[in-house]
Length: 332
Image 1 (cartoon, one colour):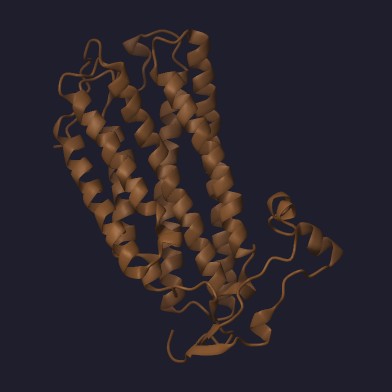
Image 2: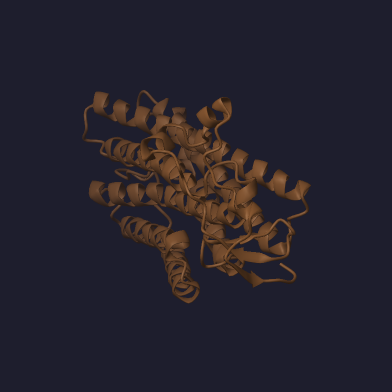
């Protein structure tokens, strides 16, 4: 079904005539994954943590539907091309945002090893993600519209370059926090299955999304380097469709399927006030992780560097005093 189609198709905005069967198949696969995510959100009552996962799958489903429309003789329709490109480009950052929320919930579960306030994972990384998302959508729209003047298309290419590089930098920072937290938990013998599995899934998801981002970065840097529409000057990644199906469609489908099968909230408690005691066995219901600083400071200084320098501990260490109730004692 996913064949190599590298023959130039006149008037095609994709360069080639897109594969007809693959976008239909992936539209169905992502639709099924999205419905599965909806079911898990209802079953596990985890909308606040993984409610973005169904929307990510919906974006991919819609993107592949429009790509399929283009494949059936509509490859010269600019609007179809632009909509398909934009939908497929904004889907992965939504999966990233879901990972940010997942890490926040994991940090709530083991608050004493959190490198950052759990709530700040959302406000910090999602805020950056939204900025990158807007750059991605704006750049894709300007680049895809070949009727725009060259200066406008070049501006779009610059936006795409910036957004893709920022995605890689953002992911590197996020993974660094995950690895620091992982090392702290491993040091204290807290990597039971209930913690290890969500962390491994989180890291695997980051790797998959990063592979896709590297592919998109190379693709757009190659596209931006073209000065004339000369087939001989185009790189293989632009002329061969199979790169897209392997490094975009398959990679992102593997990601959404993994999150279906190994959903992190099957291991973590529903409430963010329940945390794991330092004995690594007992789950305790506490007051929750409170932020004592002004809201503006949490955006400016999410890691509370000022507090570390001034030696002002603004977080109440409720885990040292015990919670209001022992939820469960046993193997975690």
